[in-house]
Length: 217
Image (cartoon, rainbow, N blue to C red; front, side):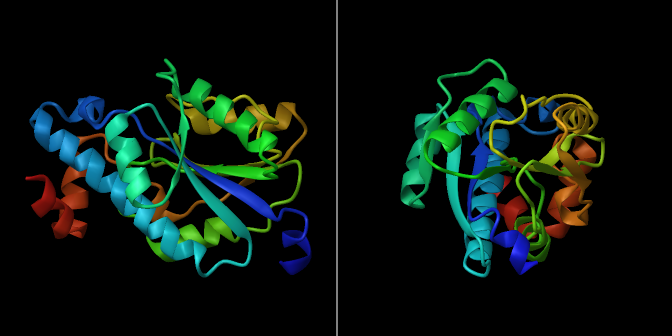
């Protein structure tokens, strides 16, 4: 692993996070608006905290940035001493990440790792496996979600592809990488496969993490 880590020394982890009051709309039949807002914030804070703990144990240099245009999210990022990249209310997640990837290149980062703000309950060891993966220049590493979305994506250089978030984005990102001639690696990690978009996801989360349930309800 060590000889590959020399190729990629500086990574920027991007967490896109929209206004919490507009998050989790697909759960509107099972959670009222304020509970959906609290859920989005709890998942977001949990992701930040878990990632920062992982960074301390990894050999590669990682920085963290939140991609958002929400003042509330910016305040939380500031409280956690985390950088903010404004997305200026980009209409699509893919456009926001495309812009953030360009900034990453300008700032001297050799790769980016995009992680959703709403992972259900990521296990630190799974995040460490992802972030310590010996990715090389011109490689894409992807962790699919349970429904073949993209729940984590690492790529070097940061802006070598156009991001393709949305339904079945796992396949779109694989295709985008192969079109560019990138090495493409699928890295299935159990706790990173699940986000919280349905009532089933929510029930699973509350069973696994009663603390989040108590904060949300």
